[in-house]
Image (cartoon, rainbow, N blue to C red; front, top):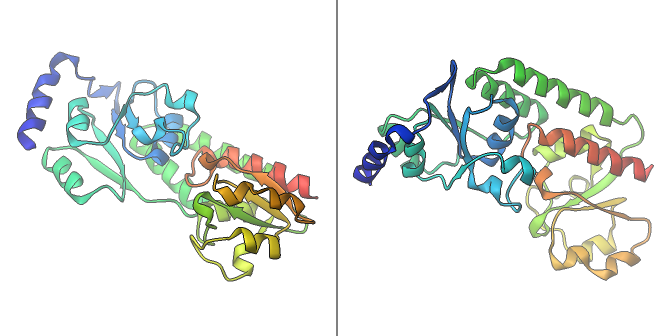
Length: 266
């Protein structure tokens, strides 16, 4: 494979992107969460490609119109090397063999984990903005997030919510979406019943022991069952799956949506 990669790099020739945009590094992102942040903080032309996940509505945290602004890769060493980026941004789940191949070929690879709180996400924004040489853009995004959370905060009695995610599971307490639910005036149905990360919530349990708000972010058969219409004193709402897993600018839209749902429960 190394020979093929070197051949591709050599063939890039004059068609390869410039190594720098002004004084700022060029970047390839292989992670949908870093895709979304970099799309907000990087300068025009800095992002050579985003991950293919951001082109798929089922796995993207970006709106389709935003993802359409960028080229994408499947994350292979060959594709990334051909683009000749200054920096590759990836998930901590990047396969070790891929990571080793990229490093061996001289690529500067930076990995980022999954943010489990708003503050962790803000730290990632600042790190990515600094990496892009765009610290001020990062601070603007941080200020927008803090304002959105302030606007969405509630001083009233918390509303019990069961977030029903794809696969019929609930989030754990140590997850970004759970932090957002707390900050926007909700209390966790799952935590009150001893449920943890990725525990399965059945239709039967919802009907026998309903939450105040059932927040559906999945398309399982049970999650749209007609029997749910007959459950008394329970509101059903939906949450776009784009808002579940990534931080950065996603927090702004998620906070607004959750505040809207909470106000409807007042």
